[in-house]
Amino acid sequence: MAVQLECKEEGKIIEVSASGKLTAEDYDRLGPEVEQQVKKHGKIRVLFIMSDFHGWTAGALWKDIQFDLKHFADIERLALVGERRWEKGMAAFCKPFTTAKIRYFDHERLDEAKRWVTE
Image (cartoon, rainbow, N blue to C red; front, top):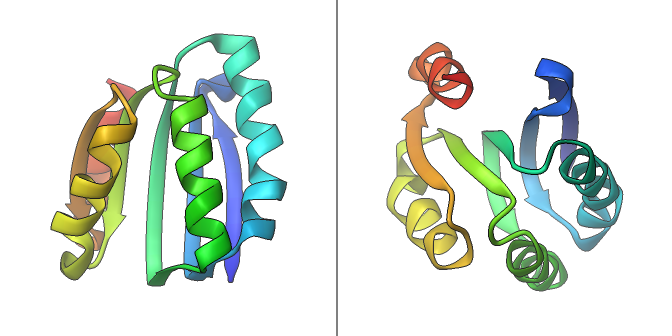
């Protein structure tokens, strides 16, 4: 799995790029950075870009649910960018675990996703 996290807008926006399959170790690495930005800014916005994404390992899925429950009200907007096959599943999976406004964008609409998450 290749996952990268970059803070934008002084940390108010977190851009995550993910490919392959997310692992528990990815969450162990990314979680503290997200928590630091939440402490600093309160509510944050997330742009999650999936390229050749294959989902989660079982351990990562559990970490994802724990993360989502812990940060239920900390994420204001979540823009998901990826292949069309993930559209319904990702939005439906995320919805019960967050109060964030969630929108899904195809890769061709990455610029639109960036605008939406920052507006």
